[in-house]
Image 1 (cartoon, rainbow, N blue to C red):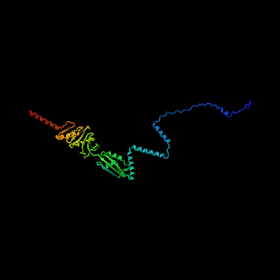
Image 2: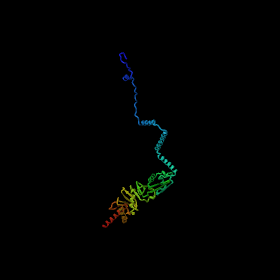
Image 3: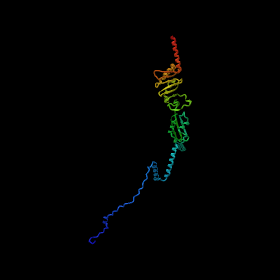
Image 4: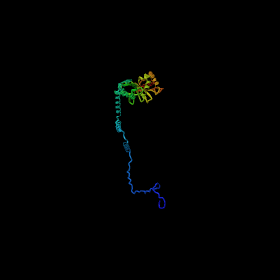
Amino acid sequence: MDGRGRVAQSLTGAESEAIRVEPRRAPVVSTSRALVPVRERVRPASGLDRWIARQTFLIKYCRLTRGGGVVLSLLIILGALAYGVVKGDHVDTVVAAWQDTRDALANVVGFRVTEVALSGNKHLNREEVLARAGVTGNTALVFFDVGAARTRLLADPWISDATIQKLYPDRLQITLTEREAFALWQANGRVNVIGTDGTVLEPFVSRPYMSLPFMVGRGAEKRAKAFLEVLDRYPEVRDNVLAAVLIAERRWNLRLKNGIDVRLPESGVDQALAELITLDHDKKLMSRDLVAIDLRLPDRITVRLSDAAAQARDAELKERAKAHHGGAV
C-alpha cells in the first residue's frame, strides 16, 4: 500500500501491455541526392538484330537431350547437302542415282526385267520403243512406273495408244497402236507428214511418202480426212488432182496436174464435182487450155482461159469478123 492507504499495482502486467503505445519515430530525411545515370540514346533494333537475338535465346535456353547434338549436326549437314543439290541443279542426277540403287537392290532378289513382249509397232523399231518407255537392262519390275512409261510413249506422235502390263516376276508386255501416214500437209513453207487425225508425224524428208495426197493451207490438216473421203467418191477427178488447197479455212480449191484450178463452193461439194465430171465428158473441160474452172455459183460455171488460149481465141474472133465483113461487101 502506498502512504494514502491505496494498494499499489504493478504496471508491467498484461493490461499495461495493452495500453502501451509505441513511440512515434521521427522521419528520417536524407540530405544526399541520389545520382541518376543518364541513359544513352538507343538505336531501334533491325530485323537482323532481332533474328540474332532470337537465335541466341534459343541456343542459350534450349537444352539438348543425350545425343541431341549429334542429331542436330546431322540435320545441319543434310540441310546443307540438300541446299547444294537444289542450288547446283543436281536434283535429276541425285534422283537417277537413287533409282539406280533401288533397282539394283530389287534386281538382287529376282525382279530384273529380263523379257519384253512388244507388238503393234510398225514405224518404230524395238530399240526406239524401249528407249521411250524407259526400259533398260537394269530396270526392276517392282519399281517400274507403268503410267509414266505410257505417258512417255504417247508423247511420240507416231503412237496413238499404248498398253503396258507387268507380268511378275520379270516380264513386261507392251502393245502399241500406231498412226499411219495419211497425207502431206504444207503450211508456212514447210511440208509435214500427217496422220488421219491431223497429227504431224514427222517432216517430209523421205520418198515413200511422195505418193500421199498433198494438202495446203492453215487448218487443212484437220479437215483433210473428211474432204478426201468426198473426193474418193469421184475417182475421175481425184486421179487428176495434184493438191487440195484450203482457202481461208472455209472452202477448197483443187490444183489439177495440168495446172487448172478448180474452185469448189463452200457447201454442195458433191454436186459441184458431179457437174464437173459431166462437163468433162461432154466438152473435155479438164483437158482444155484453161487457167481456172469456177464452180462456186450453183447456177453457172465460169472458166478462165490461159493467156495463149485467150490470144488464140481473140485472133480467131478477128478472123471470123474479117470474113464476115468481106462476105458482106
